[in-house]
Length: 163
Picture (tube, one colour):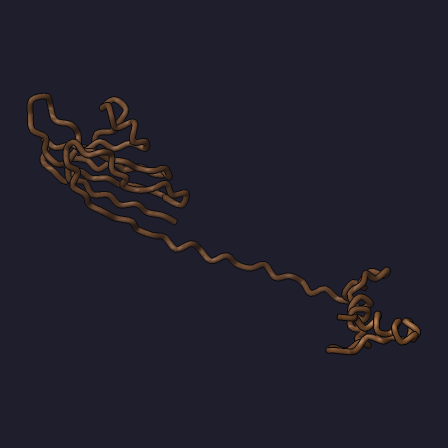
């Protein structure tokens, strides 16, 4: 099987006379050069605007506050329960124990602090715990019963105000 060039040599023709056959496309397409000329870097900088309008200060609307509430029954022996995650916009947290005086709940900012009563805060029935400005997480457990006694659940309610 001979190629086109070999056939031309067989006939004694000049190879420079061979012109490739146009199969598709526009062989005179100069789009590439035109685009290069249009998108090329210019040597002159853009002119500054003649008159710059004054920028009016934008009033920032106040943030909408949220009220996050909940009530939970904490069973003795449970692992620490996350009542509220950390929130940088939190303003106040109020926690109230809803049970009789024999049931207590412990709260802390770290679940590891709930292992011992000396590192946790005991929420009692007669006065709510108010934490103004506290933005960290809040964990709670039912206080463990005295040794040899059966533990009772602790019911607590909480409310958090955020900005």
